[in-house]
Structure formats: structure tokens, C-alpha cells
Length: 311
Ligand SMILES: NC(=O)c1ccc[n+]([C@@H]2O[C@H](COP(=O)([O-])OP(=O)(O)OC[C@H]3O[C@@H](n4cnc5c(N)ncnc54)[C@H](O)[C@@H]3O)[C@@H](O)[C@H]2O)c1
Image 1 (tube, rainbow, N blue to C red):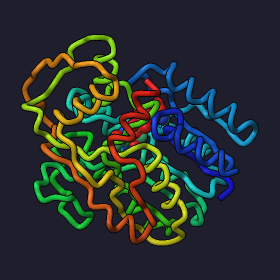
Image 2: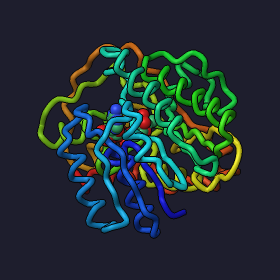
Image 3: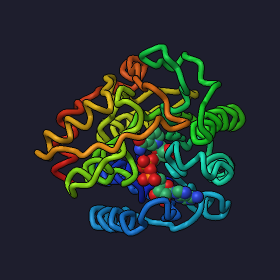
């Protein structure tokens, strides 16, 4: 693989992917608007690390997904496009659904339309949130995903459908990857693991939604990156895969793991369940295992240690 375009490559997952690809000798082009959803200084720091690692094999284009010319420049000549730029997060999407749809749906459409070569492989960063309130566990790709329960989830489901349509029309090899709560160094600051770790360290109370029994499947970012790289190797067809940690952890257990890793007790601020939150996420990764060679290499205990060392 020579030239890989990563939309959202200044962000958490995208910057890890860029780092891996630069390390493997690829040329990487990032399109990112440095959206202020969280401090753009953190994204600039990620970009500075990538520029240092990649030298002239790294290119950054500051631009918006909703700008056709910016998308065209970004995908020009790319062997693969990994589309990670999005407004992420369930709860903020309840406050500003139109903007979420604009960036995540209109932006995805604009990007897809700019890809001219049918040889360009397309990988889309979808989300476990498409499973909505699914109670059948673990979640398999064949489960129903037509009942998303937040605007963010609806926008990710829409993205998968748009990808299919464009694959049908243009023939590009296309892979949608449903990421299950990703964590690791550079994680978005509003995500639970990051926010909890900072608050425990600073002696501030952590917001604890519901009774602590909700369960999440957490995935270490390097495992996600390996799954994305494997998906970039697909040369034909359209496919959807779960990429998860294939285990579940309750909110209460997560806090205990952070307390152990940080060697400090958490102060708990109990709050009611949030609309749009799902009771459980749990990935069946057997399809990704068979077809992409995907493996979970970092269980939560080890990943939390690495994350807390970074914090
Ligand atoms: N982190 C997770 O747990 C998780 C789980 C499921 C899915 N995902 C998906 O993975 C992708 C990456 O997530 P992340 O956690 O790295 O988030 P992130 O916010 O760190 O990265 C997204 C990047 O997209 C950029 N962006 C936002 N709007 C843009 C626009 N209009 N034009 C160009 N760039 C824009 C942002 O500046 C940011 O750098 C997203 O699509 C997200 O929905 C993430």
C-alpha cells in the first residue's frame, strides 16, 4: 500500500492508524478540520508527532469533509481511503442532531463522490451504536441494526448504507468496521475512561450514570488499528465487521480497574441513566477473526495500565 488518505487523522484513532502506516513505510495524507469538539491543540500535537515520524511521507490537509474540493484533493491518487472524520459521541448528538447529520451523513456522501478510481479501497469507521438497544449478546453482524437510538447511531447506520450504495455504483472494495468503545493514549477527553482517570487523579468526583451495571465492550486502540489495516487489504466486495474486545465490563468494574491502576479511590457522583445510552455492548468478533485475521491482543486490564501510564 503506498498512499493512504485518512479523514479525521488528527484525532484519536486516526492518528494511531497514521503512525502505524508511516512506521510500515506508507505515505499518509490526513484530511481534518481540527473541529473544536475537543481542544484542537491536542490534535495539533498528534499531527506534530506524525510529521516528525513521517517526514515527507506525511501530508496534512486542513479542510472540512463538507467541502467537495477539500475531499477531492484528499482522495486524489489514494490507494486506500480510511474515513474516520466524524462528530463522535452519543450524548452530544442529542443536543445538535442536525449538525451530526450534516457532518456524518452529508460529509460521508461528499467524500464518497470524490473517489474516481474504482481501485481505491474504502474503509468506513462505523460504530457498535448501530446495534441500538440490542439485548441478544454478543452482537453479531447479522443482528438487526435498523433501530438506532441516538442521532449519532443513526448517522453511523446511514454511513454504512451510503457506503453500500457507492460500492454498488462504483465497485470500490468497501469495508465498514463497527468499533466498540475504543480507548488508549490520546483517547478523546470526554470519553469515560479518559474523563474518569483525570478526575480520579485530580481528586474530583466522577459522574456515574445509572446503577453502574451497564456493560461495555472496550477495545484497545492498537487492536482497532490492526483491524483497520487488515480491512485495507480487502480488494473486492462490500463487508461489515465488528471490531471489539470481545468481553464486557460493568461501569463499576471499570472504575475499580482505574482505581487499581492509579492507586487512588474514586469519588462517585451518582446520576440517572442518560437517554440514548444502551445497557450493553458486546462484540462477536468471530467473522473479523475468520476473514480479517483479527485478534484481541490487549485485554482491558493491560490496556488500562498502559492508558494510566500515558495519563
Ligand atoms: N472512539 C471510539 O470509541 C469510537 C467508537 C465507535 C466509532 N468511532 C468512530 O471512529 C472515528 C474516529 O473516532 P475518534 O474517537 O478517533 O474521534 P476524534 O474526534 O478523535 O476524531 C475524529 C476527527 O474528525 C475530525 N472532524 C470532525 N468533523 C470534521 C469535518 N467536518 N471535516 C473534517 N474533519 C472533521 C475531528 O477534528 C477529529 O480529529 C469516528 O468516525 C467515530 O465515530 C469511534
